[in-house]
Structures are given as C-alpha cells and as structure tokens.
Length: 509
Image (cartoon, rainbow, N blue to C red; front, side, top):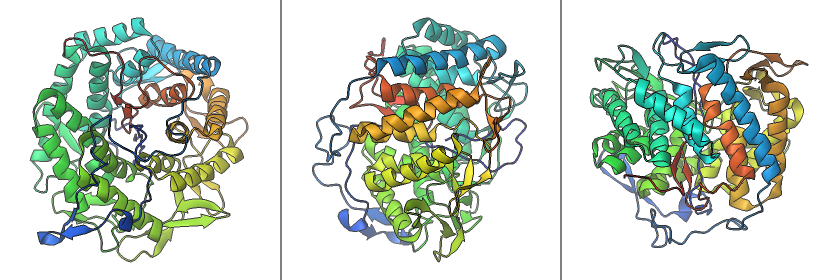
C-alpha cells in the first residue's frame, strides 16, 4: 500500500496497496462466518471472536494447515527469467544512485530528485526500501553501501510533519527488514528512534486511533480525519518491533487502533472509509471493500493472526470478507468485482475499482475469490497492456489512465502461484513484467505513465521508492528460488518488506 508523495502535506486521496504476504501457505477454508463459529457479545456492542480450533495455533512451523492443492509443491525455478528481472531492478537502481543518491526518490527522465515526506528533508527513502530486495538478490556490495549511508547519514530529528502510515510501513518496516536481513543492530536502533517519534500520534488521540501526521522533532500531531487503511496498517511493523525489543508500547498502540475501528462497524459488518480519530465518528458512509484507501486494513487483520496469533483479528478478517461477499461482490461478464455501497444499508454507490484491490484477498486463503478477482484484473491487463489506476468495472473503461508503477498485480500473482502451483500465475506475471519493461523503462531507470490508453503511452518523470521494495521483488520471488528466502515461513508486509523468512541468520541478535 502506497500513497502519492506528501511533500508539503498536499491533501489528496490516497490509493494504497497492499502488499501482502506469504506465510506457511495458510488455511484456505471458506470465509463464511458459519465456518468459524460465532462472535460473542461484549459490553458496548463489541463482539469477541471465539477461540481458534486446536489445529490453528499460529507462530509454530509445525502447526497443521489446510493448504491449497499443490501449495507445498515446489516448481523448478526459472533462473533465466529471474535473472532478467534482477537485471531490470539493477537498471532502475543504477538510475537512482546516479541521480538521487541520499534523496527519497528519483526523477529518471529529467535526472533530478524529489523528497517524499517533507520538502528539503530527505530520509533516503529509496535506500531504506531497497535493502531487503538487494539482500535477496545477493547484491551484497549494494547492501553494504545502503547500510553505510543509513549509519552515517540517516537522522529522524526533523522539524517537519511526517505521515504516520507511510512512515510506519516504509521506514519502520524497511529498517526492520534491513535489520533482519543483515543483523546490523544500528538499523534496529534507528527504527526504534523513529517509532518513538511516531507514538505521539497514537497516545495523544482520545480514541487511540492515530492522527495522520506527527512532527518528528516536537511530537505535535495533526490531521484528525483519515482513511481506515492509515489507521490500521501498522500492527505488523509495530508488533515485530515489540517482539525484537521487548517493548510492548508499539504493539499495544497498533492493537488499540485496530480494535477501535472494528468496534465502529455497521450492523452489516461493513466499514466506511474515513474516520475522525478525535470523535470516533465516521466521516463518510462508503464501504469500498478491498479498494484503497481501506485495503490494507483487512490485510493487517489477517497478518496479526499469522504473525502474532491474534485469533480476534483472524475472525474479524473472515467476518469482514464474508460481509463483502454478501453485500459487495458482483459479477459482470463473469468477472468478479466489488461494488462500493453504503456501509449501513448496502445500497449501491459506485462501480469504481482500483488496481490496488487485487492483492488483498489472497492473504486470508480466499482462493476462489482471490483467483476470480485476479482473472478480472488480468482482463484489464489484456485490454491495456498496463493496468490503469482506476476503472469503471462495468465496462473496463479507464477512469484514471495513469499507472504509478503499481506492484499489486505482481504481488497477487506471486501469492497465488506459491499457494496453488498453477503455472497460469507465472505466465501472467511474466506478461506483466514484459509490459513493464516495454512501457515504463527509460534510460535513467523506470518511470510512471500518465496515460496507458495512448500509443505510445505517455510517460511521467517519477520512480516511486516502493518500486525498489515491491515490483521487482514480487516478480523475482515468483521465478527464482533464492537461497536467502524460506518460502514456507516467509512473510511480507503490505509494502513488500520481509518480516519473516530470511534464511541468513541474524548476526549479533
């Protein structure tokens, strides 16, 4: 999940992603509430999930799971394709190093750079995003270069407002993954310093749901109305940090934010999109299902179960996705989509769909829904070659013809391929990669497209930092079998950060 650059905190609607996950190829049972008996009433209208079945104990490699057919089979790696993907990652990376080293993002067409969080305050976002990808690809000299820059130059004592959500999934997550990959304890220290600076966004809130911005130097908070994805997409990063440091404050803050949102669901078990975190009241009425800016909220419910054994979060994920199935799923020309509805009544609001939506469903083992939704977006890929940001799914008409180098389609292909072993997902992922190379590649790296409906496609001048964390990593893991990643135990965050599964042991932990 990634938003557009905040810069001077320009207001905008923030598409996200999800990024997803692979974790022991988890249970694939249906999402119906009846399959996971009951939710018990608690005071104040909250419903508590019942205890998990005995064979569903998380956090143990030996736990019994109901894997999809073929899920535990290993296909042979396609090393030739993996090396092509690695080469293109390096092309993008060399462009960043040449034009923007130490800055947040590169503009590969003009040879300039830009900052993501705050103007004139770079934090080396692309460097932090890239470390675990470089490690998986065994580009150790580049890993050392990045770690050296972080140790020597990274400083979060910045008198500027940083967006809490983006800082959590990209900076906290990136530093955590870099630490887990390399064992460099200074990376964990920098991560802890940043998390401490973000915590006032949670602790200053009367509801426990975080404010949107926090000044990293003063702790001043602002931005009381924000989407649910920004409220609830932090438990994996903060929970992992609590696990590594023994400091429960981070996990406690993230848990409180998740639960505060769940308590405010409608009688249909649907969530609206934006919340005022001071009043705890919804700021709109639109349930957008797996689309941004709500998507990764649901991913992280399942992630809290897989990573930390939170059975409430597992059952809430199933409750919400079952409600989406009942009130929002519909088929058009035999393609599965999710309409936007009033979260209290279920009445139709729109049939818009974001390309980021494709990566949410696989995380909870929703194979049938996930596979069908992936095929729907494959039809869009077939039509345009590059998936537009947003479509009207009743006609596949592009509503936003941009493509901001979104990685969600490749993310979903990876997850479904390793879950099912179906070569269809490799075939379509390779088509995605070839089109990426054809249309997004420029001499200085990779850039966004401003209109995928034109021929040639109109190019912009921006390579988002998440490209170094996601697009090429998802593709590489789909075709390679890197010795540094354990596919059975691996877990990736919504930003593609490896939070579990490195084969290389942590040194000095």
